Image (cartoon, rainbow, N blue to C red):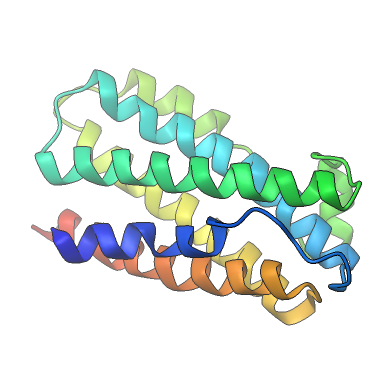
Length: 176
């Protein structure tokens, strides 16, 4: 379990100091990455919160709690950076498609999960979280290939590594 928590909170290490150096370059990919991840993390928080109202195996409960904490810290840091860069916190979803982004819509998963029978809920929640974390990996990889800001690039790398490890862990939970 200790290894899991280290992996889950690994992405937070880039989030500790919210400041970004004024002279560091910022491009449109950096801004788009942060805007997409802020919205994405808020939806991930909602998905993980569903775990609070259901009976779940302890490992799934702990995973959901750790994901909420990690994503809350990341969201706070990314929001701070966007404000420092004098950029909007959100962007029209259609604009993301032009830059290689994907639509962020977890509402279908939320609705489906709320209606899922208790016996099926842990498996369905894990599947939704795996898909959600994979989206974060795709956003991070786009940033790593197109971004310019060193702090945003570092965060993208940490998101890629941490979310990949989380997916492996969740797949193992599904197989057990």
